[in-house]
Image (cartoon, rainbow, N blue to C red):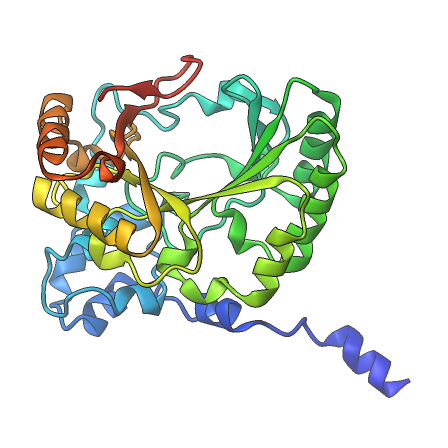
Length: 327
Ligand code: SF4
């Protein structure tokens, strides 16, 4: 029938967030134009886009200060010349996650928990991302890999918690996410799912009633861990969630900015959970904050904020059974 033919040949309708993502900024010169910056601001970083392109949703760009090349949101996404410098001690896989692949798409670093990589895609490409060179396609962050990862989870009764990760797990559509959660629901030894995401910050339209339905349909306890690094990234939040930030030179390495981030998080019902020292991924050396400086900043936060608003200062060390608590 003609209608059936049309239906088969028509791509699935896109939701608002998927259209926004398709329309995201991918060209550094365009980002400069949108922000009223001279194109020269982006030129030196162009070689870095070959291996890790620029990607910024327009709604996130709209939170940047026009005309300010040092805007802390811009600096997180704008490719820089420093990214192409090789520096000893900074590598493509700083957390040695390649060694922690327990099955396709399944990273197991800590007892009782495993990360299921649902996709390699994100809505934004953060220049400091420790997975910026992660070989997602060959590591099972694919539909087929996820199916194998789910089988491995079902076979490992030492696991009680599965962390949906990526890329950004919320970049997958509701139907796929719903299938994964239904499969996890049916694995008796699991108690919790955790979702690590930056989408509510960089593409808030992803938080749809349909997504909330998918997440709340599970019998498993659910924990959402947000990723925001600067107070200017935050709008209103519909639920109590946790935040983990990365300490980044030039972005949030001041007690005033970190305190403002914590206060803004608390104001919108988000618990400031972790402040991470930067993972030493190749190309991100210019974001590094020495540990001594980080500890000093953390001391200042403790002097300024109520205890519940002070995130724990941590570093991830390959091979350690959990995150290393520094303060
Ligand atoms: S959203 Fe997270 S996984 Fe994606 S690029 Fe940024 S830091 Fe990396």
